[in-house]
Length: 338
Ligand code: ATP
Ligand code: MG
Image (cartoon, rainbow, N blue to C red; front, side, top):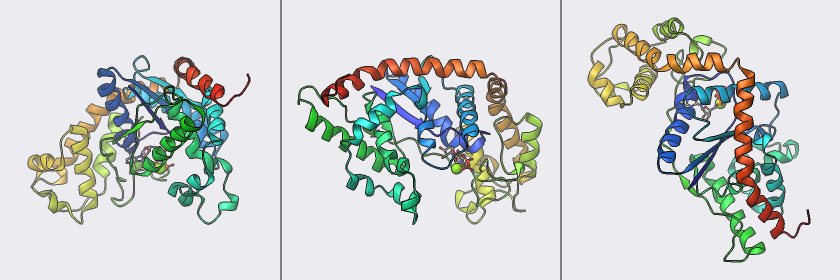
């Protein structure tokens, strides 16, 4: 069994990134490697150039993301952690698959329609063929399972269509070049809201640093941000329904539940009837105790460029070795002389 999953490199990581994305990767790694599977986790730096981007920022974000992933529990000895740009087979296979993918298939991708908007003529070709690169990302490793959220289901279907057509057109039935990967539905990702506005997502682009808890924040900063978080004057309700129309309260209770590994009902059973004067310090303590060890590693590792590059180089080497047989088979099936 092989699991392949990619993530866009991003910097200045915060609690939303951790609870919404990174934590699920760590859980998948722990669950699947225990079952004998190999997890390949890559930073989708090649995908990042499909939209306008800042080259200096891309390199920095790629390294920062590695620092965050490793600090939060991705183990480069158990998982294969790498970036696409160091494994040229991704781009090569994409080109080979471009011969199989149909314009009509890509034209139907809702993400393409959404992202290009009205300006299709001005969109990059990469934005259009992005799903073919995604297909290459997973087919290259004979992925058996790919975690996909709602927005990526269509792209995985496309990858399966491409694999099937390629196998039909260029391979014999008893020796297919590609495995058709099955989707796995990841655990529902937490959606963390801003500490200053319960209707806005916590995000690194928010100009107010008080709106988010950064992965690098120290204990005092975390406590202060939680204490200053926007709330309402009511005490916490005893039932989840009582959080309706109270987005800030709901967000803080949700954060507590996720960090404590329980649910909203469980938190309200404990804190219902209490005011924020009691709940906030408890939430702050919980956040500090869970985040402090990761934050300490992250602060150190993000400054250690040599260590980060070594992790990426080692991951890329392992990924390249796994990619070679599939890439060779694809070239050969197409009759390309090398
Ligand atoms: P930006 O403001 O530039 O969009 P961001 O803070 O939203 O940055 P991204 O780089 O867009 O971060 O997201 C990286 C990953 O973290 C994605 O998988 C995204 O879904 C997840 N993520 C980001 N913000 C949150 C959040 N507030 N709650 C849950 N998940 C989040
Ligand atoms: Mg975002």
